[in-house]
Image 1 (cartoon, rainbow, N blue to C red):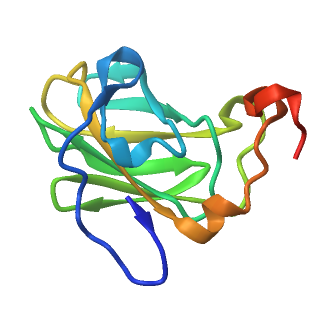
Image 2: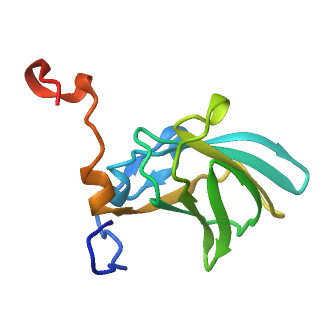
Length: 145
């Protein structure tokens, strides 16, 4: 969902894509193009990562699991918190460095099937999205702007 000055809470109603590992990605996530990857699971918890095509400070990513409701524990590269129906993450001012560059990782606990794939929904600030430089590889005719 792209937001301008006025807040919009409407969720996109159609056009779902599949992120890595089968996570359903709402069309509202097209700007940051996240994909979800389960990194590790253990009895009672798991670690997952969300990799982004583009880092936009302040963008929010909502992760909802259909078969269980995890409890957020910790995150690297984004601030996370439990919200109704899932976990919400807000991207930090700068992307992390090293293994978490252009993404974030988190741990959570729960008591169900951690292999279940979540759905992803995003809220991106329109002004922040407009200031991001387009990678040369994505410019038409080799233009560099």
